[in-house]
Image 1 (cartoon, rainbow, N blue to C red):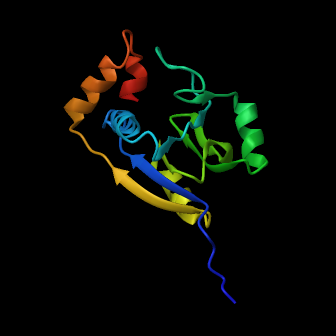
Image 2 (image 1 turned 90 degrees about the vertical axis):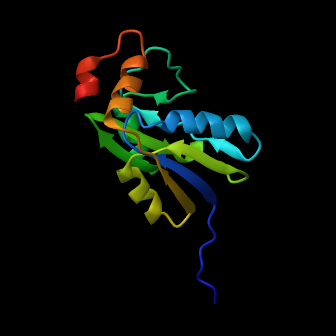
Length: 149
């Protein structure tokens, strides 16, 4: 009897601190390999930043809706970061391409535990100065208190 579980989803998880270039790498991979990769659009309870679009950058949902999805096991991972919730809905994945998205270290740990997921992690790094400048230049009027936090 074979007890090996077939992996349903392939995920390339981009991980690193804020401003390390995760979104830039994501956009470049999708641009150069549109038929091989599928962008994972995560859910969050945080407010939209300037220039973000619901359903393109994130699905911006209420804390109540987020909790309901977690309790119904509709999320493959969910985490709290800076008092906001982030998670990945099962509906955000496809099984005919490599799913690629941005994940926190806690989310990666949760993904590693899933028998349905074949996971590869790419950890990005940048100097503190580069990260700070990227975060400040992300918006015309950045929330400096949020960046410092």
